[in-house]
Length: 142
Image 1 (tube, rainbow, N blue to C red):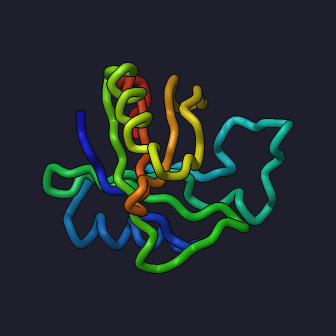
Image 2 (image 1 turned 90 degrees about the horizontal axis):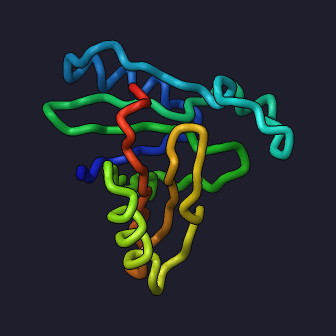
């Protein structure tokens, strides 16, 4: 199991990822935009979201640092744009940690299957720390 940092930006994630890749001499980053995700007729993608970065990851000196633009209409506060991400190959472990950390906090997204994970969710704990939980099946390369 790993705990990774997740950074959100307000429309300039691509610039941030490319900057950090150059600074730390990492491999060229793989970047997925919201427009590259599978379409969902129940939630049509606004035009202004299509070129925004949904996910990118750099391995900086052995630590995964992940990046995303905030979705249009979602709040962005510089300084509060960091969350911790739990990745595990054990779904039961993810569920147990999610349930413990959500107590007294706020669930952003209940644990559920997404196109990238069989089990993903997010919450803010009672101390105000944002957490993301992701089952790592080893299938996604990003």
